Image 1: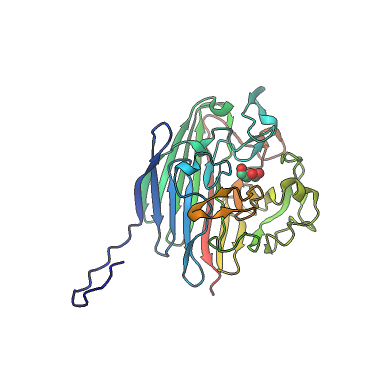
Image 2: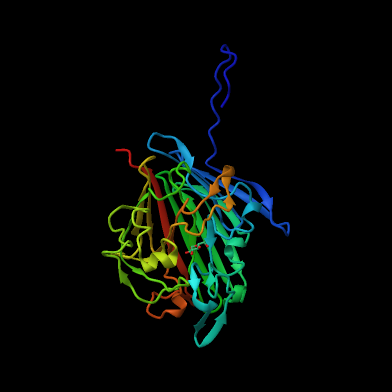
Length: 371
Ligand code: BGC
């Protein structure tokens, strides 16, 4: 903002802040350039992301008094994300969540994946799409501002069959929706399950943890897990359990209750089976942070959502602005097909065959509870 030292000087019109910018943001170890893209809307929302991993670096939204804060966890530089074992902000592919014993069989053939989470494969393997530099094409149109990120994953990448062409489009609209569109095709039968892995803290990191956030999940069932966090195959009713978020409830209200599933997840780290009353976008979750009044509503075309309460954060990571990320500082709400679907014939299928197209959409709508 220009300082007005000389009162006799006529005021110059303020340059309008650009809605969309793209700038260099460092490079990978092999010298590939990384770009930083900034999206802004008329209501003061600003989203920064980079082409490395399609990572959301920050989301600034106003609170109920109009004060803007970054509501996501992450790091200040691109290089800090190169060992992002917590998956802060990333686009997850090819397969979000776990595949049991790092193996699956498709059309009679067994594929072996990297076991990067105990005996299981997590979030696409050791070098998933979260560690690739995506090609960016930015756009600005009546619907908003955004960027289409594209990536070609070769046949056999991390053990998965088929050359996959993936596209993820991030759009920020003027009515404060952040729309994530996923699209993929494959040259051979394969499995696909993509998600966005941003960690949120709607206080803008002003509270030491996210346990006071009120959460509603539009689900009457969830998928309980074994002690390696692989679904048992059962769809269990949430009613009468700490997994019932059908009415808004503080994340921390029941997280410490004695419950075998909470013990296995070290808190919430489970997939909820969304009600999905109709085809297309359906309500998945609503979050409200009582002190700042910030709200976030998630709608999706996906059948499930992983609510992960940041249990594995343990105070060893220092993030943006020197903030230490203690346990449950932030949480993720990852829209998805159910974990381990390739090995669970009763779950909705994640198989993608040549000639068909994987599409999926998730919308994060940001607001406040101001009447
Ligand atoms: C998983 C957690 C995991 C986290 C970070 C989440 O999607 O459900 O178990 O710790 O990602 O890797």
